[in-house]
View 1 (tube, rainbow, N blue to C red):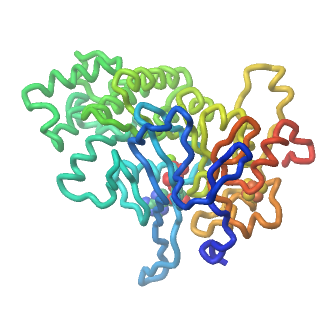
View 2: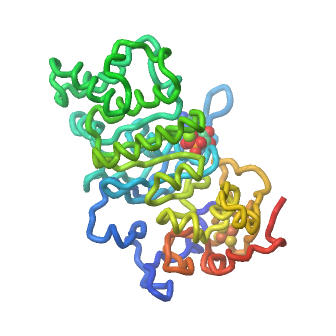
View 3: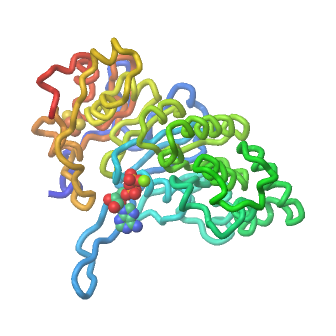
Length: 381
Ligand SMILES: Nc1ncnc2c1ncn2[C@@H]1O[C@H](COP(=O)(O)OP(=O)(O)O)[C@@H](O)[C@H]1O
Ligand code: SF4
Ligand SMILES: [Mg+2]
């Protein structure tokens, strides 16, 4: 049975009230933290999907689709960082590429400053591409080894010559090098002459060259030594303040994400399972998938570490070409009930014991109250 066939079994979308249940509405969008009430998001996604065709046979015919992103909605507010976490293959990079228009969505919309950008073409699209930029994971492969650092950072000016006049570009590149903590006199050096951390600084300089409003950082520190990661994260924090940038920060290291993020979204098989303020996700998670991820985060305090139980998930992540029905996590959830494979859990504001935040678990409220004492019987593996 497909999920669309099950749609009659999905939950009505409700606003959160003090009792945790409010009026049903189809158009709530994701929940807002109180600090965002009255502030317009700079970037939003609504029901965004990206399906890649799967082909087979001699005459390559489509036999199915990899549902890399499958119904994602969120708001990003000016100057904030939305962290995105989730296991490898859950669709984080695909979502990042959709946001910077490197990929076309299969359906859904991306709204930048109030305008649906999925319908833009030509000069409008070119203009928009200035405002949403990306920094890639691997500083070793994302920089052309045959080009000097100066040419790499100046590349965006070729496509957007209006941003910096030709005569001022060299000076601007030097400014950018200084801004990211590199020596401007190294403008004529090649990528191989720099360390991994320095190369990522070059990638960041290229990312901010056009004065974007949103920077998508796709695992920007994952390929770096731990000692260098903090320096690059601190650079991103400083640039965000100085340039009022909004970040989508993708990473699999939950500690790094907590450090940099105002809000965090947890992805599983192309969808958000939970989304909320950093403390709501890390301290008051209501979704069993998030709770399992969080249980593996290193805790510095030995007393807290001793009290904590590791939740080990059984089995592999199912194929995104054939995701489990209804709650996609039900095949690995240690708390699944019978209706979890029938009733689609919407990403809704749910009681977390100290207010509420968005969670796509039918039993979120129960777990938020019980999460303090996950018993030995709940531990898997
Ligand atoms: N160009 C593509 N063609 C087909 N499948 C793809 C393509 N890009 C990504 N995928 C698939 O989409 C899913 C999500 O991938 P990705 O977005 O890279 O995940 P993540 O960044 O979270 O590791 C994976 O199953 C991956 O194999
Ligand atoms: S809806 Fe059911 S299967 Fe899904 S996370 Fe909640 S308890 Fe687990
Ligand atoms: Mg990725």
